[in-house]
Image 1: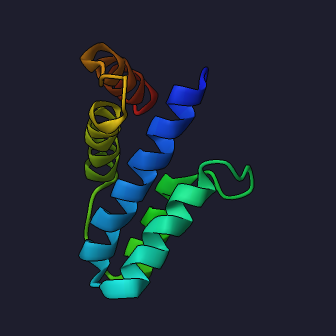
Image 2: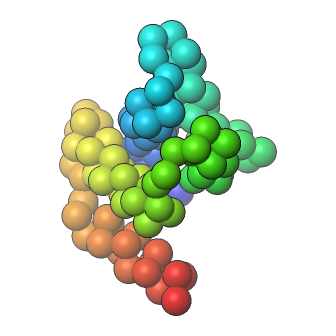
Length: 108
């Protein structure tokens, strides 16, 4: 991350991602809020910052069938959404395209 805006977008993305994952896990109400908040806090905690692995582990434990590609795709979509929701910033489609290209290269 290169700026405060990037950190803010990632925190917001992780909160939105937590809501999406909670829904898939069947978690509702205050538990869903707590799950979402925990993923948002993980953004700034070096010990917890791998939100993809957390969601993958939670999905596997709960028997939720979702591909790694789908989870990564949702992460990319929500990063764009977070960028659009941040005051004074805009989501850059070129940034999302770069992330998707990098992920495709890493998966080969």
